[in-house]
Length: 150
Image (cartoon, rainbow, N blue to C red):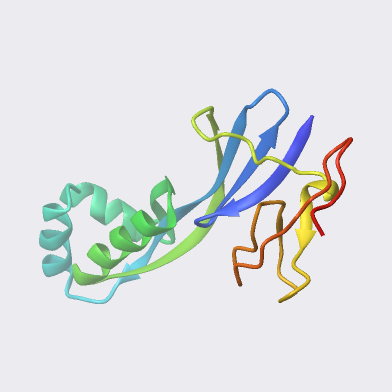
């Protein structure tokens, strides 16, 4: 059963009662649309990125063609920038999502409304405590069998 869903640094996290956390991250692919430099210069620069001249010619002939897929956005941008510096015309497209099971993050604790109070001095809402965290006003809560100190 899903307890909560939250966003954390661009990733969606789904929390379950059994303390599982699934992180859903969007993935991207880098497409080569063509070249903007002379053919020979482009092939030489792409060779430095790890492509053989035959592969570069094949990618240009089949353009638009995927150079890399399944990348997080930051890596996709860095890869696209390297290809652009080599003289390629590129585009980044959303590829899908990847799911990762992660038990390291504790689930979000959902508290009851009875666990909260509002400071009568400043109006700040917080989890019950001895004093207001915002203004320092001291609270006096009634405990079972005791009367309030007021």
